[in-house]
Every structure is written in C-alpha cells, then in structure tokens.
Length: 402
Image (cartoon, rainbow, N blue to C red; front, side):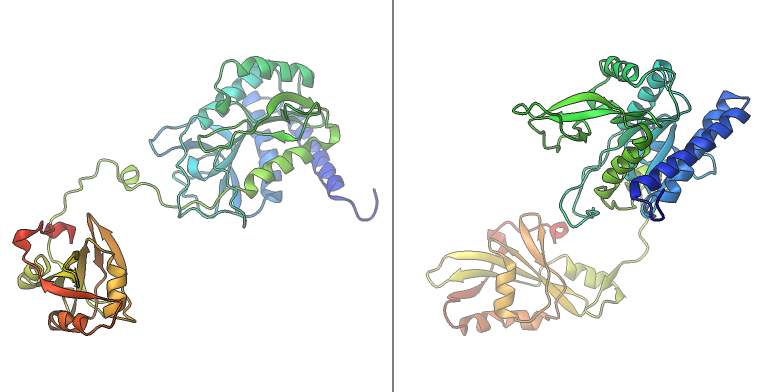
C-alpha cells in the first residue's frame, strides 16, 4: 500500500479489522446468544468511531407518538444531539422513532432463516409512525432536501449461501410485507450488496441504488426499482458506509420535545387557580386585581372605522391592560391601521377567532379616545374617520376571544 492511502483503501483496512475481530469472537464463543451480542459490538464500535459526532448508535427499542413499540433492534442510529433517551442502560435503550435515522440488524452469518428474522425486526421498526416535518424542524444541509424515513439495513459478517440465493430469498420475503416495510439494503462483508437499482423506462442500463419509496410526501420517480445483487467483495464496507452517510446527510434536526400527553400519561389536568398576573410594558408580571380583571374582559372604548362615503370598514376595541392596553379589530387588517396612527410602535398582530388582536401597547385609554380627532386630521389617502360603536347593534366578541 502506498504511503498515502486512498479513502477506499482506508475502508478496506477497516473491513479487514472488522473481519479479524469477528473471527476472534467466533473462535472464542461457546454460546450463540453471546456471539450475537459480540458481533453487534464489533459493528457498533466501528460506527461510533467513524460516523459524524451528531449521531450515536445503540441497541434499542423504538417508540412512536402513539406508544407503539418495535421489536428490539440490534443497532439504532439516532440523533444524539437532540433525541431524548427514554430508557438508558449499557445494554439497550428506548428511543423515540422520530429521532432514529437508521436501524441495522446484525447477523454473524446470513441465510434464509436469519434473513427472515431480520425482515420481521426491520418491519417492526418501519411500522412505527413518524411525525411529519414542521416549521420547527431544521434541514441538516443548506438544501430543502430532507428524509425522515428510517433506513433499514441487514449487515452480516458471513453467509451460508451465495449472494444470489440471498437476493432470491429477499424477493420471496418481499411478497409477505408492504414495500415500505422492506429492508432497504443487505450487506455481507467481503461478498457484496443487495439492494434496489433504478431504471428509467426509456433506458436499458441500471442506475444507482436507491431506497424504496415510503411516505405520502415522497416524490414518486418514473422509474423501475430492480432488486439486484452487486459483487462488491472487499469494497462492501465502503458501499455500506456511503449509503448510511447519504441517509444521515439529509436527516433533519428534529425538536427534542415530545407530546405532553404522551409524557404525562393519565395525569389530572384540572388546575386550582391561586393568583392571576399580567405582563406590563416593561415585561414584568404584576398581580391582577378583580377590578383590573373586569376591565380586561370588557372593551373600554369601541369605534367603527368609516370611509368618507359612509362605508364601515372595521370595528376597533380598546382593552385596558396594566400600564397600557391592546386593540382588537374585525373587518380590516389591524397592522396597517396601527402603522398609520402609531408609526414606530413595536406591535405584533395575532389572529384571534374572526378578528385580530394587537400585543400590549404603551397606549392609555385617554390616548385611544383621542384617535377620532387624529384620524380626522390625517392627509389623504387615509380618508377614514372613527365613530363610536354601539355594540348592541353588532356581534360583540366574547371575552375569551380577546
């Protein structure tokens, strides 16, 4: 080997070390269960040494938002930076499936029987429902590409049959499961890979390997997926690692929080109120007296926004709040009106029921009562005036909507 090895050669060296460790465990093992745990450790040590530090690996049970639990998977690759660990032990963990990017079933030797077992375990993980992406999820790269699916891999250190026989076994097992539950790839160290090659209808050659489509948001390609085997030989570990890295590259950063009801279970949600508080305009909480609470629930002043030709455009209400107040509006967006009458005010407008509500403003009741005069002096194109509103003639918003 040259003084400066290539990346491919570095992974071949890693594959050689995996093979040596595997053979060492196999020769010294007297119990099949012990052997299974030891070969999982061999592969997990390799992953922990080579994967990006964002991801961890562990034997684990997976759980979804509806409390469905998978069978124990040999290795779960999860986002160690954001995933809560619901049960932690040196042997196994319980992880929320939303944070799991891939699962790997590890076999010391692969044949039809052990492949059948791996299929069922992969399917039990893929059956779990993942939460759809939301605005608080962050893409792992600068692109909009994201994948929240769970990559399912079967990894074996050896096989009792040929790679072609294993591919035929996979074909038969595929008939027993929905396609979204299939393992995506099967790897046998030093022999090769089994996966799905893409082929477009207008081409005769096969393209690169890809995962079977899963999820309703998947953009279905106009292509065939061809179950295929590749005789990668010494480069099998290289393909395994780049496939896994491809999945992790586009796995988004998901929020650490889970649904409250899932964490709290059957806890009573009835609260006994003791004291009410309100934020003032200095962002400090102050005690709410019964008199102030009454003012908060009833508009102190109400106006109708009318154009010069007498058409009502909106209804405004002012509510007292500690050292300021807030404004409600129906019939016309509130933000443009606030920018006209209170330029420079730091106000946030929120949608509430069939109207809008401002954040708390440094605006007194007296100042709001001066608004009709200020509107009358506004230059065109305002062309608006405020008139007192008789709420007995209108549908007054309920206190809760304010």
